[in-house]
Image 1: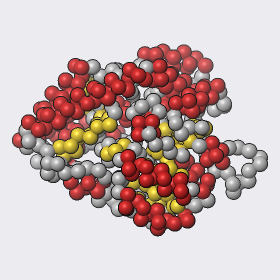
Image 2: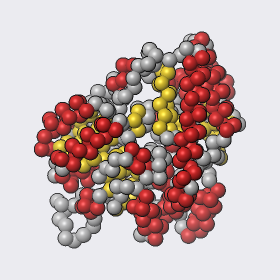
Image 3: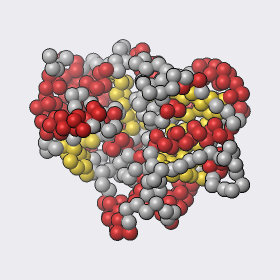
Image 4: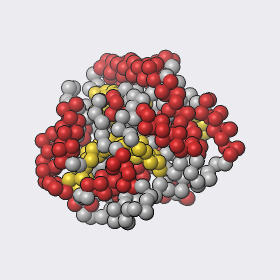
Length: 445
């Protein structure tokens, strides 16, 4: 029997259903990015502007997904779009070095605390792959630690323990069975568990990679004592501390999560906002670590870390859009970041209130302009790690919640990210949608 909220979605989106039926004939599962699938089928959109998206059936949605949290300036910001229209006259992709990549690299080095050098690629997945390779190449060691539940793109090196308890070890078929010989996972904010893993790695400990605010984990934030421990241990042992800031870079602050929490890593991976709406990835960090990827006749093949970059690395449109976006954020940082955090606070307080009104226990995580609703098994249970998500929350309710929100004109997948284009009317609409959804879930309709 189809749930009422699924039937409502199907009645509202027949055009998306038809498109998905065609897509399933020509694409495995009908989709080319797994996170864009949601039951019973993905929503197909035609356009986006400001804080809203419109689907193929003409339905409008307050957008909290915001292009995978990329669109901090809103969808299609006029200054960026107008500059790209001009730039296209000079070529779409040229595949040669251009001044635009120098300008964006200079801006990243200027605003990101850890960045002494930066190297661009075409996706966040590539960036985390290269960051791990740099850590191993720089230290001459093998063991990389990651966080249970941490998603760093689909690169093979880090594809373990992403979705516990469904997957323990390698994340699905096609991965080396001994992947966790050199990549091991630890629980976020668990100093004892992490210290044990570091001791076990011993002289082969190359580094650790983590998100300061876990995207796939529901924006659980790394606590100050835990981050201090990681910084001290990696420094003491000559290992590399890597922050995955593909989501948080330039979003929590102009200087990213590292500025926000006051801890500087050795390497940072970037994406999303860095590209200003265009495809991008980057690795930034200490010059001595980054420099071993440099092309030079003085370095042998065994000494150099190979970073290919990809055909579309430093695509000029990406470099131009990225520089425009960072310049806007820099010029308005004292306005944008406090306003986004304040708006998110009001929205999250409203969401907490409507769930409290129907006695449905939730925890609403918020950090800067990012948020996620966790459905608790009991009021007051902690959510400090992926172990807590598994043990203390109803993970399956999040998919139901997201579909119900779409029925009420709000698009989200997991969590939400605000933009400068979200108005007071948007926020009130989002809170009202939560009110309706909370009532439905409490009544089981």
